[in-house]
Image (tube, rainbow, N blue to C red; front, side):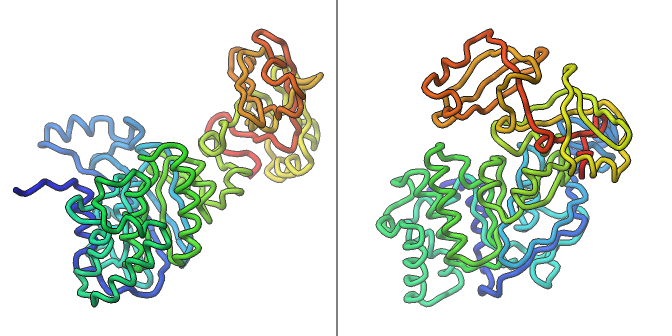
Length: 419
């Protein structure tokens, strides 16, 4: 009796069947990539759905051609670079990865792997390997057979298959499971098998679509570390998709922050954290999330300061220089400050304690400023042995911060005024 396969299992087969011999490692270039999903149904349905052309619905742009999932995407990925595509669910990152894999058609633009444009190349001929979110293992095969499958299709000699599978199993510490079926493995072990099946193929490009999202928090942390080690041992180009900004920050050489099908910012994790391009990036990258205040940028001659709730704070000379260079006028702004950059002091913005969370080495203090929740990370060492009891509900405190750690965003378009 034939068992119906999960779609990703069939996709894995399509990517593995008749795969080319492993080649040199490769760079990946995406030029003006666009993906539009045409309207389903007849003309009446199309007219109904296109009625709001140019508007946004459910975070996606609606056009006469259909729903735009990815738009104006340009990225050069260097040979052996680890790139992470990060963003909220529905932002287009998995769609983009599937276009690179050949599992989705590219509506517009050009995709190059190495020196070859591969828009119309079948998945099996792209020399890529993809690790799926739900593992996509063949349930009737053992771990060894799953990992050897692509090599058998390529008619690699049995001795070489055995050697490659055992080498990959040793890298991933799954040698003892080679004779087991997937159903006898834990989620973390299955994900290692899925990664091992990709490793043995020695692909030019390694694609990973949220591979850790089905694991619990402890296993996610362990597997993150394993992927970092894997990257050091398997020297190839990685393109990794996740909605978890912690994964993005710890894994990527560069991260690409996406929202609504558009690139919001590209940079190293530190660049994106320290210099977010706009409010979306600032709020998405960093945990706990950045705090935002309604504020006024005050200009006096060539000097700048900010006023929050009637309290004026100076800005660093570096930020003032950037503002002067762009001749930014006095205006209403959104002020961003990370929780770890705010201190509880004698002076500053008045706030009222709502609750405090003990996190071990720090306390996450939630305080209300004009009915807005502000989070402050207070090191436990700063409150000695009082711990969470140092802050009681309804307690009045003052919040201070330095002018070198604030972020100034345009009130209208959300862009960072100091970039």
